[in-house]
Image (cartoon, rainbow, N blue to C red; front, side):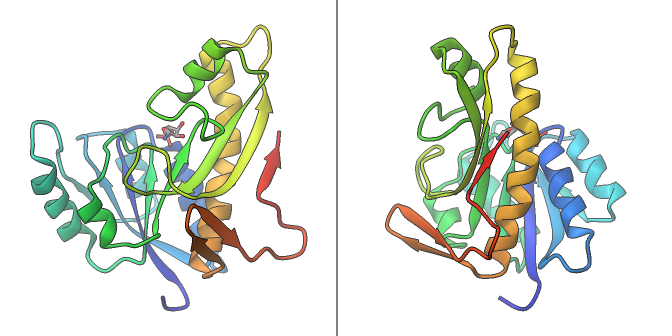
Length: 211
Ligand code: GRF
């Protein structure tokens, strides 16, 4: 990786996590540049956020297509990138895609993994009745939300929470976690040993954010 990591972000929706990454990368001292945003759903708001920030975008429709076809086209759009960030990207990537970026595909998930993987982390945590919820930033492996954990952050679940109010509190944590973890990755401070990611922390840094 050169001094500044080249990062692509894959999105499927409103893109608030993309925005957090774009805002972080706007700082000239941030060690990563977001060089492309790819959406698998046409017209999503994330594309507008990228355009506002002057980042080139591509739309590669996934619906109704074989995964291999879809991923080949995404790869062609990405070009040379060091790190791929999934930010509300609602497709599971194949091992063949992930092998192109070994331990360099990141994801943000709205639950404290390994609890509540999948598409409904917030709803599932509330339905289970946990008193703590949170977010996990992790590397992506062949499973669904199973890769090595980079950092996590927690918030209380309140008795009168709705899915929406809890999601908003968790989202605030996501927006802090993701740029922090991308910085670690871009600075080459993350190593992976089996299931565990290790991070060379600087003084004052922590892998757990309380909320
Ligand atoms: C976030 O809750 C993220 O954790 C999950 O999908 C949601 C995407 O939100 N993977 P946004 O598009 O980043 O606003």
